[in-house]
Image (cartoon, rainbow, N blue to C red; front, side):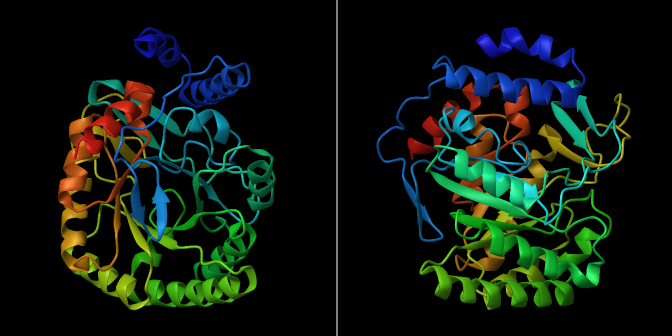
Length: 339
């Protein structure tokens, strides 16, 4: 109820300004003990995925907190896990502004942020300062100026830096906002990247005495042949999870709307069905061999249930929070824990 009253004021601000303001407000309220308190999850909510125990199956998707600056405030919303990033080895400003657009009539966002972040060293510092000790995913990517043939160097560098503090690490090869990044989803490139990352994972597991799972985040704009090839590679390299899906370059459902023709990735309600269809097809290809984390257009508890029914074991929220507020987290938790 409170968020529905505040949202018109936030939507009057430029989207990135509203984003920063909201996160800073959550952090300030949390420090004063005035922030939202989700309370304990219903009984029977815990899930074991990737060898990790999640107190509930509803997580925060990467992109909301790119630098791990707001972990404690976001944890207070009741998420079963948080994923931060995407982070790159070196700081980078991302693409020129404006680069984030609301499409309220479609309950959607278009972003072309371009992995804007303060670099992996800053993220590590922020995580160490936080009190949060729940399940933490760190989403990693390559710097925009790193040639594609050297992309593995960037991913391996990030993996090394975040390994000690992450519960799992997500390999982002599906953002449409870093030039040519999605080419890493092609079979040959993905095979080489996964080989490098899994070799480094084994070395780090020996050094740290613990194995940190790897997840791969894929796009919703893949055809059946591409999904089958990716599924085969995830199984062959024993990747621990697939996060399905990132934003889409399609414009179904937003044609003719203000900002509907902006470049970037589309998220929110227009992505819901497309993402769920990809989850269903990928889960069928994986045959239970690799768990799927469902993300993309979860705007209600019903959407979350459909992702689980399609084959996901966990779900993540982002754009739904912008339109629905913190109440969406509890709504999804209660719906999924009824199962």
